[in-house]
Image 1 (cartoon, rainbow, N blue to C red):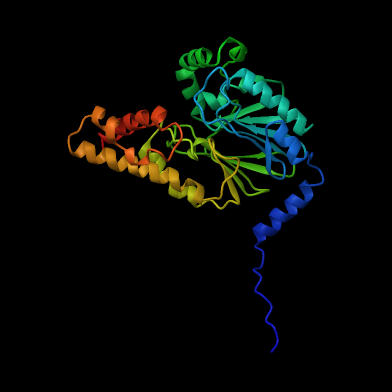
Image 2: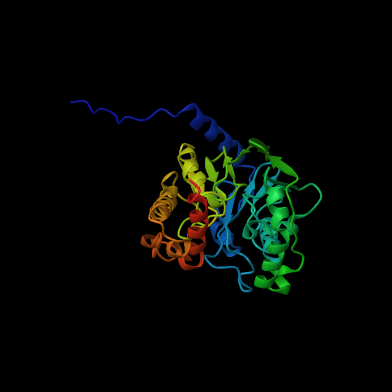
Length: 322
């Protein structure tokens, strides 16, 4: 009896175009070995995409604010950086590392949102020809918090790491969607509605199908709420509709499967919102909510005790006005 050959799915036009793009990119991209990449503190997760994984810690003088993920994306004519860590010293280390990865000029520094551990390294990249890119609400958010952000960063990282740190607002704003051409690859930036903050930005690399979510995606490290819990829960189904080969969180491992990666975040936010709503309905105080809401999530996240009480407070303050 003749053998029936196994069924092979026909590649889609998107798959074909992505393959063609990668084929054109690969001979031109600077290459370093995985061992060398690890030695200098980055991992290449896809052709031309390098991730530095931040520590699961609060900012202190030893880590110098290096607690969030930072990314370098290399095209055939230019490179882009996504987030710059939490101090000038950490940002300077990142820039020096990128110099070992590629000789392509850095054209864009993209900030995914306002939080200090993602923007305080910006000053290390301040040079002619580099544009700083962010959500259209990012300048106002940074301006409103400038003094407190600088004072807190200085106190936490110390004089040596802080020296040179300054707030660098974006020079190129994303109102809805914006494409950035690095040569051979296009990054699509989208301004998202209020969720983790009111100035969250996502980035998609069409060449490799890689989705960068900033702090809209946490893994292991507990999510932090500084925007709207309702908005975040409403946004997650929309984010899950994005087709991607992989996702990179703002805090967590270098790469994750998408959309499965965001399921724990969605679960945590749903538990928190459900518990807080029940307590509000039962006439409980915010202090009672902080003590008990969301405690079923304890043990599932790093830094739970450090950040969860503030999340409860933010959720209660928002949801009591529903």
